[in-house]
Length: 490
Ligand SMILES: Cc1cc2nc3c(=O)[nH]c(=O)nc-3n(C[C@H](O)[C@H](O)[C@H](O)COP(=O)(O)OP(=O)(O)OC[C@H]3O[C@@H](n4cnc5c(N)ncnc54)[C@H](O)[C@@H]3O)c2cc1C
Image (cartoon, rainbow, N blue to C red; front, side):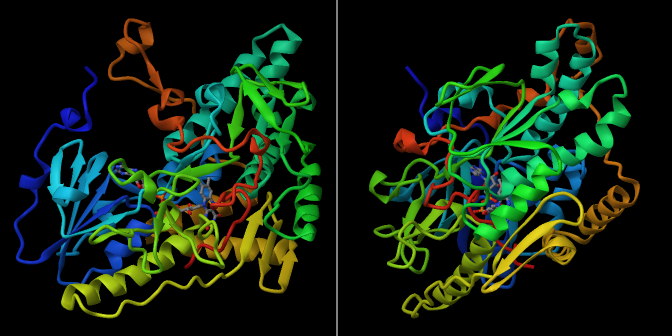
């Protein structure tokens, strides 16, 4: 008999948390939403328990820089225990939340059950492969640090192999990189790989001919950056073309076996590195009524981020779909939305905790604009009617991202790395690291676990796949971030 969620728990999380005279707020997920909520409630008369499967917060907008050796992994992550040092009402537990049990006001975790007075679900999003099992198995994705490291390792491992193959078609397959998704993440990644190909790789691998390396960006619609203006699309197109990126517009990838990607039109794209940044869906924990899950796997919430028909359960950030006449698919899945919802909910929860009859403040999203960058000195910024590119946009991009990185040390490390890369045309260490528990792994006696074995790489969406005509597209309305990129809120 298959074990149910409760059977997989070990430990006693409830006993590990001190008994407090105050009500307990449990936050599931320490992304932008969960982190800002816990911070904003630092002085509230609440016991806050943050649960996350990682012991650190990840700054996802810069994952592509880790994947391309521009930044060290540590500069885009910060440990919760470091961030919350000194916050007296705060407790962190590193667990997987397996399901919610609203009936008993508890969450079931990998370390047992924990009761709550208020529950906030902030579990973010998962990669959506639109039901393509082979894609889920073979494609590389970029939601977590381990996945970015896996991409970085695959780039360099493939080149090491390419050096030693006498077979031209195999060499081509090892050197080619296919990126699926022409939104901000796809174009930033393509630009960073293009820069790597132009400035770094020929120096590192003088015996390889990089004219044979193809970076292909596949986009299901007829242009890049579909969520931005035509001008932004043109600028992105020109900047990427300068890095010899090749494009396939109006093209859907329909299969990938780890060696060759196939398009709906029957074209074969040989590659051992396909990076899928073409869609995401909400990642809610189990246990909520299916009727509460909207299209795109997100939890429907009212204008206060309250999950209707549940007492004291809220959802914020990517996992929440606040459906209104002006946002029929919910707000875009962006960091500023997550942060602003966290801030509004913090005010409401603090007030509710003092007076259950208080009138809550509805959420209103302040859109500060969209931006994306492509290589050095080039970026695109669109803010209300203002739209600009080139060096000023790039400097604006640098400033906003630097300010948004969590923690002074991380800001400093990122700035130092960027300055070094800029001045030297170099990148961080291009190490290919095999993780092993002892030296026997290297002798082949023990299975060596590499970053490419990272377990959570290929999450399958909880919701049924949308119609096939959307495959690889950027029209995933509930908030495909590939279509829109916003200013992270400093
Ligand atoms: C590659 C990439 C680039 C991006 N670029 C931008 C950008 O430039 N600008 C922008 O505004 N936005 C960008 N985004 C989107 C932005 O990062 C998200 O909108 C934002 O992170 C959402 O915050 P969140 O707190 O809702 O979820 P997340 O940040 O995804 O956090 C969810 C947290 O929940 C934890 N979790 C999930 N499930 C469980 C579970 N069952 N048990 C325990 N823990 C769990 C996870 O470990 C994670 O820490 C990008 C996203 C990606 C992936």
